[in-house]
Amino acid sequence: MVNADRGTRVREENVFYAYEAKERGYGTMKLSRYEQETIVNYNAGELTATLYTRDKAVMRKLDTLVTDFPDIYKLTGQDEVSKTYSFPKSYVSYRKPRAVSTEQRERARQMMVKRNKAKTD
Image (cartoon, rainbow, N blue to C red; front, side, top):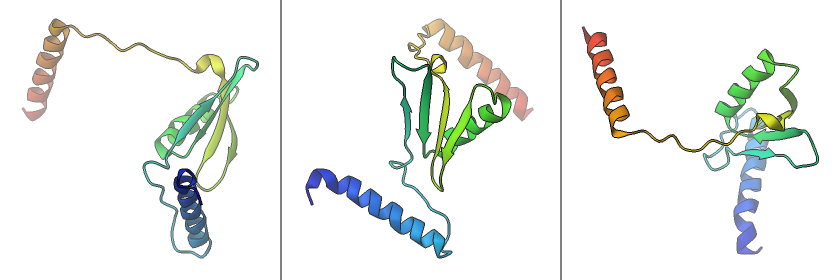
């Protein structure tokens, strides 16, 4: 076995053993933070994007979108640890970082101080 493959091979073995443990009734599968990946895939030739995830938080968000907007977001596949969704690639967005001035930061800080004071009173 080559070292470059070692990481992939170890993850595959861990997933296999976890599936096997679940089948035998030893509990649910727990993925490491590294294994909780999300992959978005699209190309210029198609109108849809595909999202594959093993992250429970991402699954919850997309399951809500599938329920609320079934014509747009679709669950296309799932297994014990992952789900795959499809949706229009125009819904994938990129944003530039927000620039906050010192003035805006101070106003926000003052507002939070007021809110926190009101909660404790």
